[in-house]
Length: 134
Image (cartoon, rainbow, N blue to C red; front, side, top):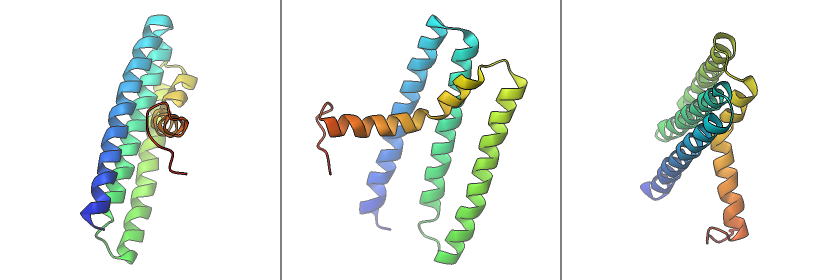
């Protein structure tokens, strides 16, 4: 894959990660101020899991670009199971070893998805000045 395709994708990952981090921090602080610590820290833990999972997915995608089809399939399959093993291990550890709010943890897990979908909705509505590509 050429740099013409990879560079915009890397920029997308970088800006999405940055926006999700900002959203996570803002929501975490807001929850801490207006709600309880268990909800705030639960959300923050979920948001961290979301960010790490997103970064690992991006690393996996960029890591298989130069591989042959056969080795790419093996690579992505192994990394897929490894990523979800880490993901669920972290969730189980947080849920069973802390008093963080379970629902807040699960809400935090969707931080990156909220950023991606929200950005698309804002772009489609014209609020952000972006043009809809539909």
